[in-house]
Length: 425
Image (cartoon, rainbow, N blue to C red; front, side):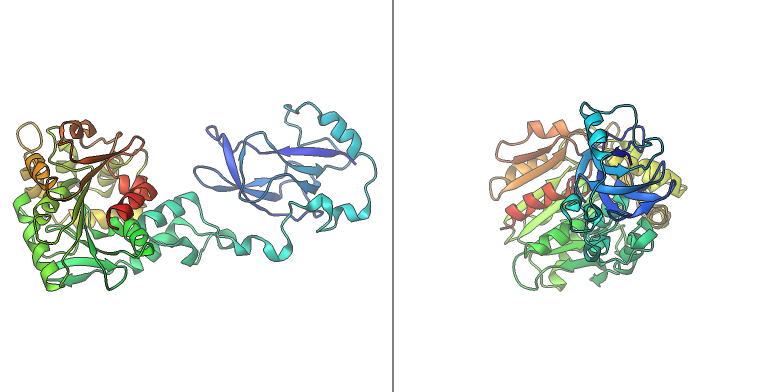
């Protein structure tokens, strides 16, 4: 027999490394050419690798879950007496002695599961059934929606969680309660200080699902609300001045006095007004509007007047560094909300003749004298200019995320959640 060295294959032009998800054949088990023998997770999806010839897996060289550079040896394969189909022409020094040694007859027990030669192979009762199987995109959407993918029944191959499975789970959990005509989502323990979360232009309370899940895990209580003219909230807003009052009324009806307030983008405008209420101890703004002049006015007017879900998709690509990751079903839901025309007047009021029409700089300077004020910004923001934070009061703490765009709470969820957990202690 001839022993070949199977290397991590390149399954895409841009692939430089991959995570070994599972071996689809056991050590010592024969397979045929064209049979899928392993699964690899790239930065885009999970793909099966088909054998380029017949063989037997003699020994696996990397563990399941390991991130492996392309070209790294991952298994020893008995390719029989035929051509060595594992040889890609880039054999490392020392490969010849390996093959020479492998041609010698091996003991029968060398292929038995549990023998020294198969120490990297998973036992039959510890195969992938005990591990989460989900595509990278499904994981990303679940993370943004604050859903544990391990709780979702996958419909993909061998129970893999696909994008559609996460979408269905998110839709079933999206029912928002109402207080004083404002839709809200309350998570975390019933007692303790509350964190109020306010979304940006064109969003709704669901954009905070990931953050709320992380806060709840840390024992924090949080409430996110659909701003006027957004989502399921019944109040309309023709100007930024109309955004804060309905939220204050809803909080009063719920008997919630937020100790900490967080606002994203346009949500910073009502956030600074609500932060003046007694008992508020901190204010955190994420990619806030109102601290500079430049703004992508086309983004605002485009969302408010969008004619198709495809147009919405192109616009939302601007809020993240790279593709937004929203599915066609989610985009259709967003478009259905936007098509109601509730944001047209508000979009016009946010933009002046040459830039932003609202400033919160003086408010922030004043609030920073009374409480901790923090700003989280992404250096790849395409909607606002992150450098506007450079002229703010030195009393304001600035958290820089160089690789994030306009939605750091989506793109860098772990970092943002860590900052909020520290702020809300």
